[in-house]
Image 1 (cartoon, one colour):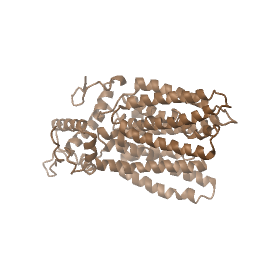
Image 2 (tube, rainbow, N blue to C red):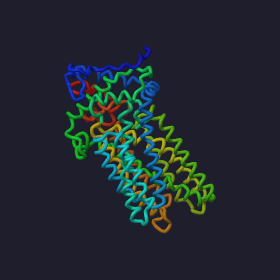
Image 3 (cartoon, rainbow, N blue to C red):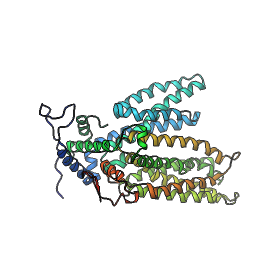
Image 4 (cartoon, rainbow, N blue to C red):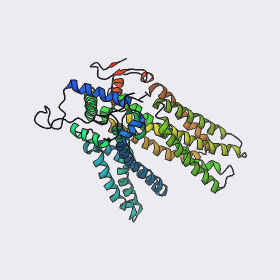
Length: 454
């Protein structure tokens, strides 16, 4: 294997010799295809080690953006436990605003503006004299929370190369895109890289999508081949909400009837969170070796079996404390398996499946759909588990197991494998309506004028 040459950056003349103006690169279509092909080959050949060396700035920026999600999750968990969930409407509005705002102002300015709104708005519930003001404050706070929910996912998918997309999960003028690429890469990495070739690939992908798509409004996400991509993104993301994840927070309810003290039940609950964290960290590694579809299918099958066991154990004699202890323990395993598979893989899928021109709006719709069904979960779970309500107890697991089975069947026939594909290659596969089960084995030449697939 040849030693990688240091990073090299080409510069186009900024004088009158540039045949295109207004920031467009002066390259003809032949040169563009040659450079885009080189960029594609380079992305496929990059190892994880070299990618981290070259894109460490992009990784850092993605992690910084992701801290907004941590804050959003903390705020919703803490404040929601005190007052309920009045911020949902604001979040959905914020999601819809982000679909327009990020395209209009870019990631950086959108993040800055929403952080300012967040800082100002937090004073409303803090100084609220009555419940009406708290409600208004929560709805306003939901606006930036909704933006945070999708901004980091789309940002990571845009700045990360093929090999790093699952770990981190517009372009604007092309000269601005080249400057952004230089800020996101490390010139002293020792890894061969050409920013102009990468820009050529961006330009090629965008032009190919413009040729095959009618527009970039929300309704265009449901037209032609994009309707399939919208379906996959939305349903794969919806699985997070309807796969029984709502049960994870109720393991304590089964430990206490098993005879555990309140203190020990609480300790088990802390252990559940720790197991979830371990599962999430392990997911970073398995996504580098296994395909998204494989992880999704294995994850959903595992959750289905665990929920069947949870529901079946609830038919045992209530006087026997063993089944209650087993149910609580199975929910611990469920949490780790969920955070190892379905939990993180949905974020990778929802960022990779949409076309680059529809990504913002598709992610927004997927997250909005998840939020709406999350609200349904919040309404159903107290009734399912309440002794004075439906009182299903652990039999609720059978209800969610049915949804897991539906998602499992759907994924087998409809969920394609995007692992290792550039966005241009995915565009060709969807345009040619390649069946989901054949995505992996199909060879793609996106630079063929006929967009050949083999």
